[in-house]
Image (cartoon, rainbow, N blue to C red; front, side, top):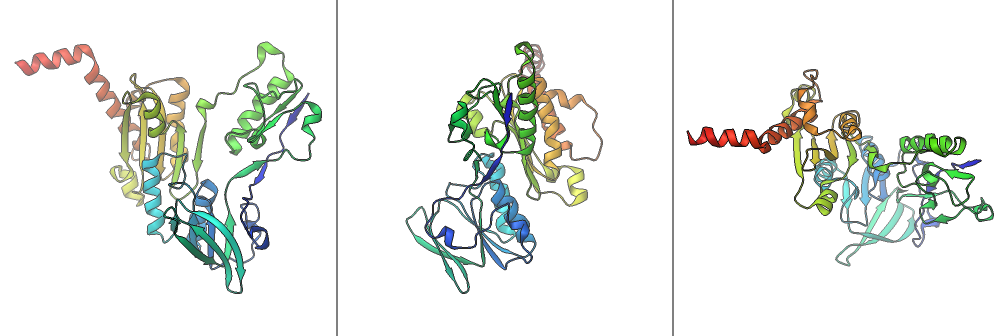
Length: 344
């Protein structure tokens, strides 16, 4: 049996003049001996935002150009708005709904012509350019078709057991997708190896409902499950949303880390559909919510668990208290008792 784990590489969009300029990617930027004075970043996804925010704090003047309506399009809109405002306050220029048309080189730097949503032509100039428009699966040159392995736009085509269209060949990681994160590659690798070696009764399926990830800006943005927008498109108004701001927890006040908010989306039974945290140590905090999701427990269960005080975990425990109170209000007997008391 075989496993394909050839990873991915930076995707280079087809833009006039792009091959004539000394562009950077997330793989080559760390080879720089000297930081440029200014940089245009093409792409407002995780790579572009992480590197842009870091380089900005190192003194590089950053402009981010994104084709979509907002940066980080897969993340919760409300939390992304908070992050975007923070980037603006730190001096980063973010241009959305804009398409890069051509690149050209000058003695003073690199010029990018972009077209805005209003069809306005804007010319940007910087000392350097970072291409952060996504990644592409490494399938070229493998002659996979000769082994009966089919590919698609995303990469190698696999089933729920990570088996390709060739019965004895499995695949995992970036070459498969859909989540291009190291921890998701590890998750897939364990399942692919198990399924390649063990007979059918012991085979496992991937379950992407448990996908979780973080974006390492400062502060961090962590994601588990559905965003509020996704949940409303699936469940309509049959959801409850609980929020808690970092400025309302004592640990955040003590550390001067008051930027950010936690957000939990639950179904009618109080079980987590999605959890999103933007704030200090968000990528650590998200795991308590992830455990609830994995065990299919309601958010309200957290309120009875003793947490250290003061700690950032309040951004989870306090929304759990809100969920618990709401569950009490929905309880038939408590609701009846409340009506009786009010009549008296």
